[in-house]
Image 1: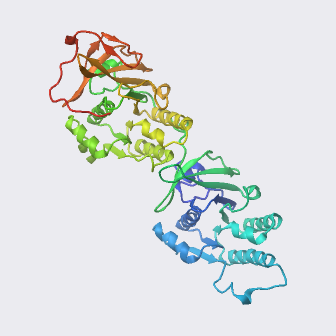
Image 2 (image 1 turned 90 degrees about the vertical axis):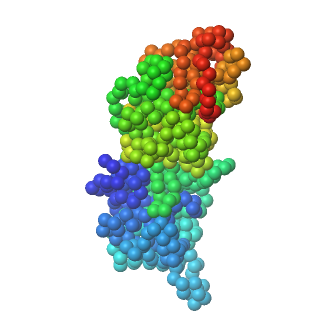
Image 3 (image 1 turned 45 degrees about the vertical axis):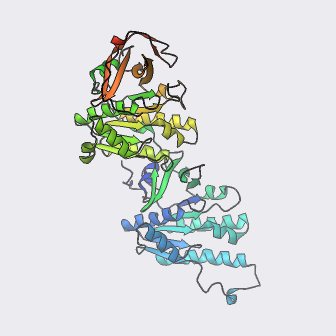
Length: 503
């Protein structure tokens, strides 16, 4: 069932990704807590929740103890919303703060807390709403002044709402000391919103469901963004949630020699890792494989982290692989991604959208080095890549991953070892022969076929990547610095006008 379809006994939150995490939405007529520091999107989530109810004919009431109606309407306007279907109720009237409103016989908090709670109940009885958002509990906490009185009032509100068949969201800005576990125990479900800052780039927002009674939900952290139109949540990718497709026959890379190296070509449902130093031709080799798939009528998605989009298009066109026609007819989705601005969860969501919504059967990530820098911890990168590659494999997608190595000669050391996650590893290297720097390609492993153990020279020219015959006269291949010791006639003839290529 899709995330946008509510079960008969579920209330949609208005956020497709959150409904997906909750497997269909919230249980109606219960009290929920949405907590998070200021700026995490609680108000936006609450307004979206009420508007989602209004869209299906449910009445909504937004009770605000902190923000004014003018401020709430301004927030809604930034998202392109109108709050006309929702009733707004300000608890602090403009004339309620004058001297004539003050009294001295009782402690102010005792009177104000009781009056506030009674006013909330009276408004609910008057409006009879199906959905309620109370913003925010921090005001009630300040009025209560003691945990016991605060808990009693929250329990009173919970009991009151349960008899009125309301689905209620309590918003809390976590201004209390420490985590308020009392609220967690009272609420039927708790959703926590977080906002973090890294050393560089935009802030990252993520949420997790702390608890949800009676619902099977997807645990862990899920990235989200506040966009025009509300919150956009990217559910954490879990490969086991997706069906497995049968592996197909190998497909050609567009080069007979490269197909021979790979033992027949690229197998659908496998991930191929291309490693090598900067400028050796990893991107060109990947583009050639992708163009061969596009020419067969397949769809592809290319996620570009490293270089500028115009540079890639111009260079590919000069090598006889013009990508623009495929972009124009919708068969190629070519995206330039800034890892400082895009969260890993959003990136995984983009890959899912390319595969499930656009039908891409060929995916390239160029390169993993930049993707690595967007992650706060390497171990999480490997875990996330494992889920992503498993998911792509189950969908029968051909995945090409590019990983740059250190140094001109391609030091074996890399930022993170992803070779064990890949079904095939292709190594591109420079070597020196007769005073020239040349390029060689070899397949280190493949799990799907018996591959060639040879090293082949290749050149990049006007017809793209051209692979020569096997070269036997090498020494020191496994050290990472192969040395050619054979005769010149065994090498490929130099192509005049060979274009300068980049990684």
